[in-house]
Length: 389
Image (cartoon, rainbow, N blue to C red; front, side):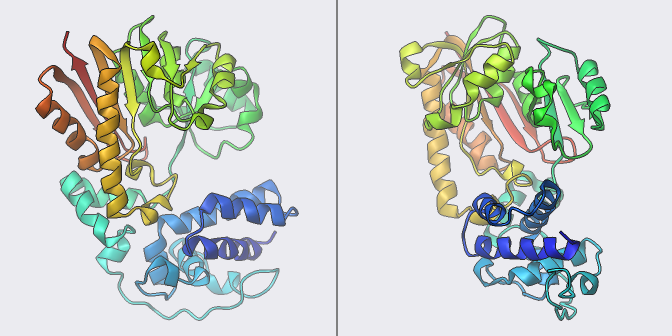
């Protein structure tokens, strides 16, 4: 496909997304209907779509849409505005040739309002400022860019240096991360990497360096019984198992854990997936990586920042409090609870934990860390609580 044809495909995919459809579903639907598109084409188109979602308000402004709601934006103008921001020549790419977009007339939209340049909804900007103070503008700006890709090295089976050498042999440029001793940062996309022996033999997994760093901060010891209460795909459960813990995993949606036993076996670990963790309690430690806004990882799932509403955020806050209380009940006296989010909003982080501490004198805050999204990791929160014996 020509560069113009890839842009036209991105426009066609973005249109239903702006109307409320899910980005991943629209990308999959387009790919199924256009079998001629190669893997490189699909990757480039995906990058266009996700870049547009990361910078949606400012790209729409640059493309002449003005500052309007998503469902009133024109996908064609959003993509044109995006490539202008990226320094490309719109007239060269929007020329109607090679299945590319038809020519488009772009007038100078004038100075970008500060609210538009932030590329988050208006109602959300005070949340960033109240939570992050002087860091707010930097964090909002960071969410407009692509996130780096990281690997977690299974130190029970190999060393980071060995993996770095193998990556070099495979043609993947990479560097060790200073954030966690298990983390490797890829300089490019991991295309084809999951089909290599590094993955097949359980030597590495994809996991953000910040997530790895927080797991390393959990006070677990080898042989301790640990529950990953909101396990999802099981990345943290696998990392805990690599540390020698006896790990059980649970998720309200058991289908999300479907691949976990296979991934654990590949890594040389055994993880017990539980439908009723209370029946196996108490645990020495419970990790509660609760559902949240995901604001710290919106670079990876950029449409989420446009779908979030104040009502949904309030629902999440209530759910987070409920899950933290459940985690406490599943923990043995003297044990610990690791409350985690991938959010930068204080209400989802310290707000939830401090509210529980205020009414539970038998709980003690042992440590707390907040990571801001940036070049080295996504944004995360961890509070470690001790349940006094």
